[in-house]
Structures are given as C-alpha cells and as structure tokens.
Image (cartoon, rainbow, N blue to C red; front, side, top):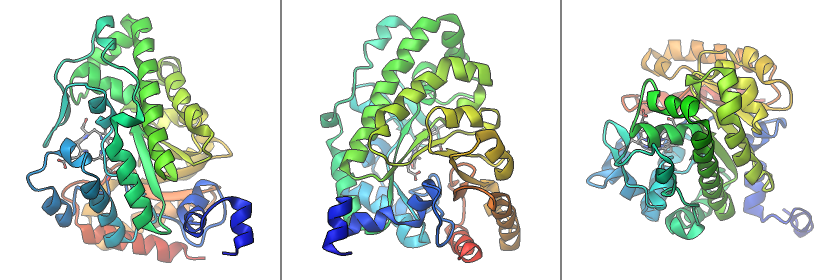
Length: 358
Ligand code: 1CP
C-alpha cells in the first residue's frame, strides 16, 4: 500500500489487509471474493493438538496464559484455513477476574460457588478494569501480530446468559431461579444486568483496544425467553453493551440459540451482524431481522456427523438461502462439538470457499 493511502486511513499495511478481509467485508455488507467461514467454538474442542497443549492445565488457568491462548487461537486458523480467529477465552473469565469464586468443570461448564440471589450479593459484581485482565491485552497483542491478514474476533457473554450462570450457580435447562428473580424481583434483576452490562462492555473494550477487529456478544441462552420478556428484561442491558463499543466502528455480532422469535429484537439491540441457529432458514431470518444487517450462520452442527455428501447437500441449502442476503458469514448454527472429525470441518471450509468463489 502507498504511503499516501496509509496516511488517509491511518491504518498500517497489516491493518489494511485485515480491514479488507472477506470476513470484515461481509460484516460490513460489502462485496466479497468468497463467503467467509469461521466456526463458533473452533478453538479447542475437537482438535487433538488442542487436547495436547491443554493436558494437565485447568480451563480457566489456560485462559490466563498468553502464549497458550495464542497457540490455541491459531490452531484452527492453521488447520482449517478459516477466515477469522476467535479469541480463546470463556464468557466467565471477566467474572473470575473481578473476584467471583467460580470454576469451569470438565464436562459441565461454569460452576459458581455462591450463586447471586440477593441485593447484598450484587456488591460482588464490581466493574472490570483493564488491569484485572492483563493476560487478555497481552494475548490479543501477540495474536494480532501473528495473524497477519486474518481478523481476530473478540467476544463476551451477554448480561442475560451471564446472569443465568451467576443465579443458577451453573448450567441450567429451565432457568427457574433466573426467571424467578426476573419476574419476582424486577428491580434487583435490572440492577444485576446493569452491572453485568458494564463488566461485559469493559471486557469487549479491552479486546478491541488491544487489536480485535470484530466482537461477538454471546447471549447463548436468551432463546429461553418470549419476545415481550426479552424486550423488557434483557434487551436494554444488551443494547448498552453494543452502544458502549459503537465508537470503535468494529462489527458487532449478536448470537443466541433458539432465538428464531427474537431475531428482530437482537438486531434492534444494536448488532451489525445477527447470528442465526439452524432452526430458521437464512432467507426467513433476513425477513425477521430486516434490512441493514448481515447474517451469520447457520448449518446444523450435527450435520457434520453425516457422510460428506450429506454435509455438502445441507451446506448448499444454507448457501442457497443466503444468496439474496446483504452480507453473509458462514458458520454453524451453534458451536463445534468435541466429537466432530476435524477433517470434516476443514473440508467444509474448502467447500464453502469453492462454491462461493466469485
Ligand atoms: O476444558 C475444556 O476444554 C472446557 C470446554 C470449554 C472451552 C473450550 C469451555 C467450558 N469453554 C471453552 C472456550 C470458549 N467458550 C470459547 C473459545 C473460543 C471458541 O473457540 O469459540 C468461547 C467463545 C466460549 C463461549 C462460551 N462459554 C459460551 C457461549 C458460546 C456457546 O457455545 O453458546 C458459553 C455458554 C460458555 C459457558 C461454557 N464454558 C464451557 C462450557 C462447557 C460452557 C457451556 C456450559 C453450558 O452448557 O451451560
């Protein structure tokens, strides 16, 4: 790139290449050389090289070691040739960083020692300062240096999904305590999600300031709510998070599972890209989300367990439904599963690139 154009954009040549990547172009709804692909939970999970470097290191501790975070984040980029990297961390890392007593138990997920149930419990949820997560700043810096033209996606858990772990004390299928607080103590609930929105916004800001070029807000379990409840009890806190990072101009992705009925509201909350699970075809999702936003998704992850011809046929269906979209980022409808064959994922990336090459 010429010096003059660098002066015009204020970006280095490397930053310019990232800016011009298929992934960021699709997020901005610009023409792309091919449909970009990445996978939620692509780091870790099904990769033998991940299991090897993680051996004997607890999950949360591995999130605090910048060299290890860098290696694990790069593994799926090297192996699959995906169009974006996602930062290796977890949605509960910022909660741990402000002193919440929690652990990530193998085969279970996040477990909170003393669940948050009362007003006094809220005092434990102080704001996050960048100095609480120096290892995040360091790892993002190392990664953007290593990644070259491949963009890095930062992420955080949305207030509702984080609240569900804090209130239930761990994974839940019914969210009974969470909903009991939401409906029964709405003021306490509002204060809880307000505090979480501050923490979440700060965690995203740290990643963007360190060099992440897009962010995804995971409201994985928001699909447990009806639209009216989502709008009233959840959307304001998530909208605050999106507002808080708007000034950076990086694409903001908003994703949840089982959120077919919420897609319009999840866009309205302030997302530039709305993630769609496998239950709603992308052309129908586009109608629900409305114009001015890109979509991300939405191959059923379980399809990856079927023979290659079936994977290709289902992928063709996703691409056909996406043909009229303003912008499309190919992804699974939810995360990579531990038992998936890594070669099937590599093939899927190649297949989408070939089928969509323009
Ligand atoms: O020991 C291990 O390997 C534990 C498995 C694991 C991994 C690899 C957990 C525990 N978290 C992670 C990393 C992780 N978590 C990433 C890494 C980057 C990537 O490759 O995508 C990301 C983005 C997350 C985000 C996350 N954590 C979400 C939102 C995404 C989603 O899948 O919906 C959620 C809900 C969590 C909580 C969590 N952490 C771990 C588990 C098993 C769970 C889910 C538990 C539950 O079912 O409630």
